[in-house]
Amino acid sequence: MNQYILAIDQGTTGTKVLLMDTKLNLVAEKSTPFEQHFPQPGWVEHDLDQIWASVETGIAAIVARVDPKQIAAIGITNQRETVCFWERSTNVALARAIVWQDRRTADRCKELRNAGLEEKIQKTTGLLLDPYFSSTKIEWMLKNSPKVANAMKTATLAVGTIDSFLLARLSGGITHATEPSNASRTMLLNLEATDWSEENLKLFGVTRGSMPKVQPSFSKFGVTKGMKKLPDGIPITGIVGDQQSALLGQACIHEGQAKCTYGTGAFLLMNTGSTIRQSKHRLLTTIAWTEFNGKTTYALEGSAFMAGATIQWLRDGLRIIKDAPEVEALAQSVPSTDGVFLVPAFTGLGAPYWDPNARAILCGMTRGTTKAHIARAALEGIAFQNVDILQAMEKDVGREISSLNVDGGACKNNLLMQIQSDLLGRKLKRPAFTETTSLGAVFAAGLGAGIWTSLSEIEKAWELEREFAPETGLEDRSHRLVAWQKAVKRAQ
View 1 (tube, rainbow, N blue to C red):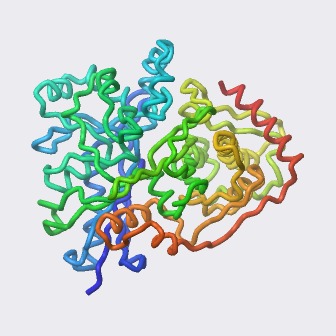
View 2: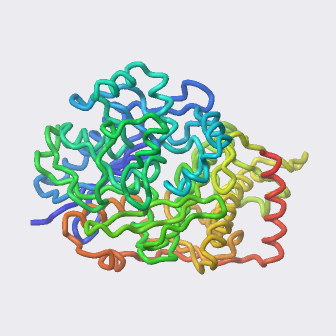
View 3: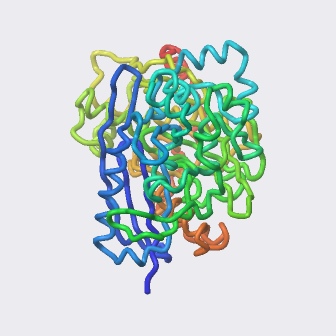
């Protein structure tokens, strides 16, 4: 009898559920979008019931294809930093989730920074003070939602990232847990101890009892109970935050290997092994995963908030394309941007700038500028952000990387990948299976269930589809990077 692994890939704009057999053949998949809520400028929220409905829709489509009793394990990967609030005994949401893109706590982060707390927080958590992370979001909700604040006072509140919320719903409310890759994005985890920092919990007014238990990424978190389409008792054995999951799915299991995921944002992670490498160039230190034997792998990370979302803006805001794939042909219809730059700081600038008040600019236009130049500038803007991050990363580790693995939806854009290779001056390697975030969840669940017993087993599954090599010289690259920096300064 075949055995299957079910992976739930819960993202910022939709949820994908897929099923693979233990030989990593894709059996079925279903993607379901859900609504984004923007109650005020700079605010981004998700309705937890809508997220859960998207998960149930995906599961229903999957189990229609196979006998659900053949599912050996379930893995979860999820948008990180987004924080959820629900009633512990009923699993009822107490508020909308505050999404990682949300900027409402920018002033609070500035206040903490002015108080001289950033260095201490970075040393403990690996993170810099920015509204991107969960801690100030939790603090804001406790101060602004009487329902949530009361639940904390009565010890009925459950707080967690999306993985914890899904785990609670999957297990019928029995399990309130998370794992280090997600927990390390909250600004509440002590990286070295891989447990909650009592000092940071106190700083942000969070009780330990409301937070989930932290356990290894590859371990048994619980079993299904009371699901509409799944039998009780299926073990949930792997959870990894989406970007760390992509690192795992890319089989970047050795120190020095790196990947870039092109999703809503762009996220570069470099495996730093067992070393907690504190960045001197405003990158983040994060946990990649913790194995069932307690061994923890760390990573350096840099994030650009707008990648695929920049293309969505061309489609929905400027309306110069009808759908995202059109951007490649449009941008390729001109040989260059003709001096046009788009700095996509629509929600501020991420690493290495961390400027929540920066705003997007489109500059360098003339009467000869066309929508094709703007489309190409958008692709270059995505790529330039990643150059800034990788250069900072290489300075932190003291060496250059020879190649960068790429994945995510936008990596299918060949022109973007060539532009990225040209601007980085590095080779890009695109795998045969580009949905590596979902694949990482499969790997995590399989490792937690004992289907695979070591990371080296999954390394053999990685397969190259195409390699991109730089086609421009150092002089041209340097000139363009200088011009990009001038554009960035105008956005700040």
